Length: 231
Length: 352
Image (cartoon, rainbow over all chains, first blue to last red):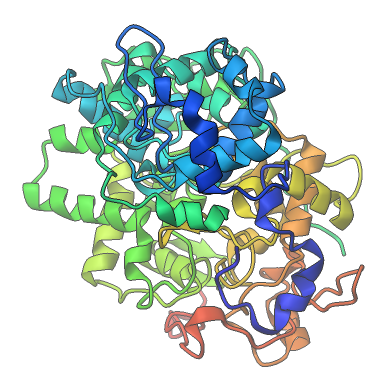
């Protein structure tokens, strides 16, 4: 975690140094195995596709891309579906089919996949994309909307297991999730961090930022790096 | 240790805009009802005090306003560069910046945000006498101080492209605000939260930090990098500001935290939590104050009255007996001496 040299003062901090795995407040003991994960993921592919790309479904429930997402993030979401912290009628029965080991395995499997392009951001005008870029990169402080990148990281590629990569995610999925937070239908974010922001966004803001992130091509970036960390 | 508490900011609810309220805004915003009729209404809804009668309320222009502004295109370029330096100060890493901070790490909202030390205020109140260094400072010298302390670095030269661009960005944000205003400025600085019921406490602060802050700033206060780029600034340690930065003062830290953190949820912490977290955070080690004489007690004696009386510098940390700041670790900058620190000014002016 701390990549900076701290020299002789490291001892002072010893007591508060805790491993990164407890960051989300939930520690998962299982180590994922991508090969086993492939077998366990057989039921996932109908929606999330064999390459983990998911699918943007305009006007419907888009299936998120899982390829290249942080493994621990996927693990947490699957546990949240199972235990009711994240409500989704489509996902719940599938999450319920997986035991803890299988959750770790499918997470390792998907996180190691190369990132595929986001869909659904192509049919919006330049002005809306510019608004999306502003919200993503700089926020709109007059509405107290902080930039997406301040938590989701540079270029929106995600920060650890807590803040998922959103660049190259499908516009329909991002938009549905932001609306879900806005309407109190989703609340498995730590410390209400996402919901507080989502509630200040207009429908147009949500459309703009979803489209902008969907058009960001991060497929050149390797998902395997995060996969390695997770294992 | 006795904390010097700043005055309470009185929270007014339901305060309508009174006649005594001075509102200034960029001209292009004048027709925009959201900014001219009820500036900062969003902040009031978030729990910030409404502008009070007699306060100067200024809404700085945005970078979008800059595009439409009727100023020389060359000036626009320089202001854009200043904005870029302000929000990505890390581009000066290894030259002027030797920690993980950007200007905008503390001055949120690109330096425009009330209660987050909006920087346009410096542009209209300086030159002025500054207690910290006991002489009259102009805007450039004030910015230079941030480099020496908050960025644990050494400033770009006065008059340099970087310094001019940063100054231009500050002054652009002040567009429309009166010079040397006689009124108090709405949302200036990091106003401290109300007096806590109990004295700030390390253990309570640690618990509150772990609960509210660690998810981003990490358990060990190191902040977080992702793909080599800074995401969450380090509240202490070598990646953070040094012992001479304004935010090592407990009340300033409490004011920053209370009004700005957790990000996106200002004023959500209790006064007590904000003070406790500030106390915990400012009880951790960080790079040495560049004014260090080689002896922490001597440094404290010299700079206590003008600065460290509000920090924990040189104090014994109760739970482990550690003397805060008793070290010669200057962080990544090593033995580089910020050229502006201790630079004498106006020595030949005689008293009237």
